[in-house]
Image 1 (tube, rainbow, N blue to C red):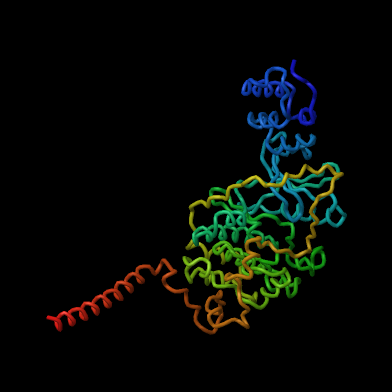
Image 2: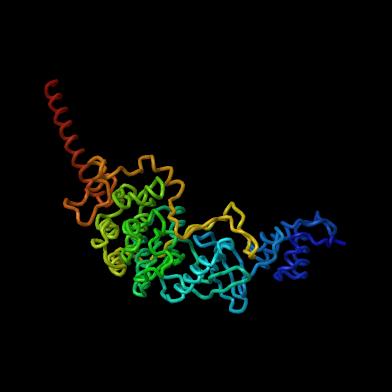
Length: 461
């Protein structure tokens, strides 16, 4: 008879309620058929048994990994957790299915060790804020609840990836793709603004993109209502991500308005077509100072296919003075619409993380990540940090050379003309002009050489 000793995995699988003994028996029989050398008495490893249950769709890979460590609690209230999505600013995010409705959702968990009365109040505020919004380009809130000491928010699950991961995987978007994604994000933000809400943390990581190219703005954890004053727990604090902060958020957080989101969306559009944050390298504090005083490199430095008209839209969104900036997200959407395309944006492949996904919080464990909603972080990738001292880095505006200044992003109300493009040989849209110029030069050279040879031959003969 086979060894029926219950291993760590078998015990956790049965206790979870997701696997019946009959399903374990079937999986064991299939494994023995696949490997006759094991025989009827040979011991089967937990890993092989877990893999077979995943292969036969009894459990998911995430659930199997948790059971292999002996964990058997895989639900939050009526939601069965099926996968780990990622770590957000306010905690961990899981993929889950409602036990009755069968609907897939994303479940955001408030870190247990951060569940202070203030943190719970902020989390509740986020839940109620998101519950008031219903727009196709905003991630919708479905439900919220508490399981023991664990507080959670349930939102719609958006298949695909976020804009940051998409670009880091596949490189910068085309003008048409970038315009389509940012235009949709602008429409979602306009709806939020009309509801008197400011996002305050618009960035590529907070824009989700489906395989069909639908964009949805997510993570309203730092959002605040306009004219809320001291009732906003983050009033007067600089909140957001340093790579996308508007100058007024840095100078005086009390002056944050809907055009602050427009500036951050402009930084996001810059990243979408260049693959670079506007001010690479340095600390969050130094980035903040550069948002106040410097101009990013001209996008053509990184993407020669971008037209000057498109760059002008980015410049208008990133004006330092809020009064000179594009005044609304609706106008941003209108300005980008001529470039927008209906063609879907292919998402980045979601590769398995080398790190073991965390278990579902039980109320007795502590999260390994310490988060602070009022802290300003940088979302810049490690590769961008390495480039900060290379040819991709930006010189200071005040101390830059004339050549540097011509390659920087134009300002909308500059006294002079727009900076000239890079040499034509790097701009495909001028390819025909280049070809004509080369042909003309070659013809002149060939003609001159021909006349010279003819003159020499005449003298010899």
